[in-house]
Image 1 (cartoon, rainbow, N blue to C red):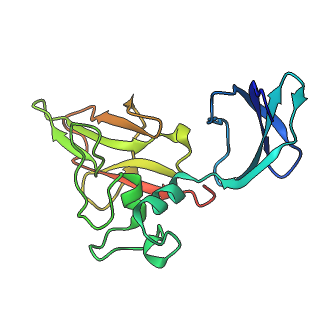
Image 2 (spheres, one colour):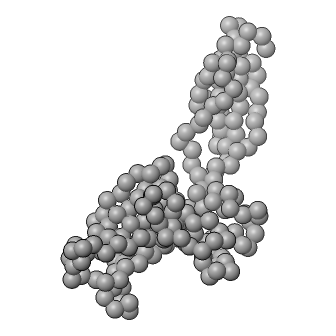
Length: 203
């Protein structure tokens, strides 16, 4: 088609195609938004000139990934193999789900979170001069729908645990992670803390 001025981008999710964008002819890429994870989408493009539009050309089917699935594909040669299963425990005794939650690559010991706030790792506990304890860690943002839930628990004797009220500050790091800071309120309070990661299988 000669004299192309624009391209129309259409998207389908198992039904009729709907226009989702229009870009000038000099652009060869389009970034789509508002997609749902773990779904398949089909796109097609129409060229437009002063006389009208061309017949649409179909693309391949694109599958959007959940954060869990994306992590598996990035960290394992065979993301469908038993080693990549999120419930699998590696040779170091560390479950993949824990690695996913704290952004810790497979094949390494679990590192502790650092103050650079970008490295991931297990929660960092600091004892303040006033006797309080500060717990900090990288968490996958709930708004990014990671498919897991973090629960902070405390104990005085390592036997009986109970959840701590979510009275913390969250500092945005990027579109997936945030830095969580929780401060113990009394110096005479619980001495032990842990973060439980709960899986939401539907995500």
